[in-house]
Length: 486
Image 1 (cartoon, helix red, strand yellow):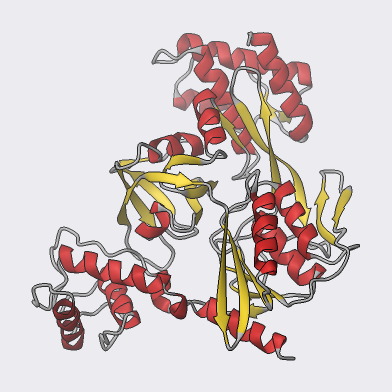
Image 2: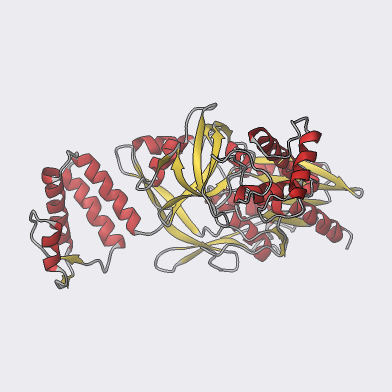
């Protein structure tokens, strides 16, 4: 791409998205910080497109020729594109260079290698939108809205989203150490995640037999190219088994393709009802209607959590507003924009927000999320941060910390009463730790060392995965049985 072509791209972006930008009118010069202060308060002027291009060329030339360190024009061009996207203050609009764009395409295939988490840039920090179900990220304990501060002990301040992603991803079997900032935790903590192969098996089916009834369960882990076809196949299989009700689980689902959720909606939502509405920048709306011939002869209930995002929220809202069905769980993430990838001709791409999506009834959920009809939180120990032992060594009697509070919450959740969950290691907490160690063939010291912490963490993960401990699922099953018997 030559300089003029690049400047035309810059101009196009300014024309599309930067009305009202103002710049200082000044001749380029070499100056010190103190000299710059002499022009504070200088009047601002509104520049024409041609003047903006001229200013850009001047800045490019000055930086390229006079900056203290050598820098290439390509670096400056790509930095300019990234800067324009940062100006949008949209965590979902990003620039991907050739390498990043290739990896992005690979992640939409049948599998890829990494930790298995959707991320965005929020308030300047790389943020977990949702770990994929049963991924290394979920197993390690990463949660929605976790902020990644360091990767392998190195600060990522100043990195773009996809620069950070490239550092996080890697070959299966290798480990990446993520330093996490989490709301409610006073201290940063480190989570080691062993990278693995992340399969893109987006639909899983099961039958739950309860009180003489067969309840179909369809879990959608993401909305990829073949998700709607897989959903249709699995739904038809469940219906051939004679199910009496259907549970649709989109917990931990970070979203995906709009057409996938539209096609799934047409299998579930009564005909003549909008599944979703798309709104452009002029406020014009397109309604995507269902054409289902007849309503399903059995009750349907959805399951959501705070990691259900984007397409998951479209489906959840459609079930509630378009189908009149219940959704059980937690308020969803709140991603209400639609992105498209736009190729720039050299293998790089823009991933740009082009539309807002509105719910079946026309509601904008961006930043708000979808409220379930039946709100249910999981037990407290489902939300705890992973245990780690710091420089002070084993957690023991009369110590107090966030790690002890997490350990107490976990112990209580898996059946060992610590007496308190405020982070103070008292005598009853010691007794609970001792009982846990004896039950798991560990040295019964009453202190939480690395081995004990790892075992507490593993037993907690095992407990979280048991269906009988899943309060949201059990509530949905109970509600469905009531609706079947009405």
